[in-house]
Image (cartoon, rainbow, N blue to C red; front, side):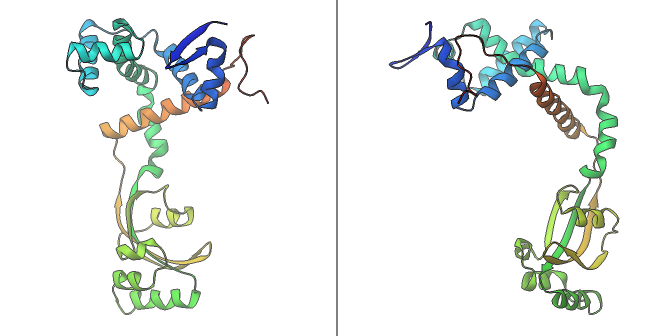
Length: 250
């Protein structure tokens, strides 16, 4: 039995580490880290990039003195070279994402755009069909303020905002509402529509089309990376070697 780490008075043996990671629910995170490290291993960095990454890392963790830096390294059982690798990790990962999926961003955006567009809308929901019809006529025919009626009658949290919801992406509302909003014109009000247990009066206030700016590019890049990571994790075999107790053992 080989000791691998000591925490206070507790000595942890090598064969105990995997079951402990599993019991703390850290094994999936550990496996993801291994997969990522394997993927970015061949990504190269210049001396300038290494220096910049190190400086940013030290500033982020407030390691502003040599003493603080040495203490941080010692506490984690690392070497100075390992500190540089940790500091470089995010940079190499972003390079890997861009190299692997950067050329797919535009087409992926077009595939996802109908879910990324945002809407600002107003909603009144009640459980009584007759009341819903009456409220609709009071808004549509009598020009009573939607906000006032929503505050008084709507039976969801939207009553607190006068029925106003958003801006939210079109994949956020109930699918029935999302379809209605996607074909609405600003100011258009819909007659009461049954959605589950509710009768809903809906009005589109503003349509905000998604734009492929830098923030959206980074988001979509992260989405594609996350999808790849989950798929890779599922299909990567994990074998527990003799002498290591499998965390799945009963």
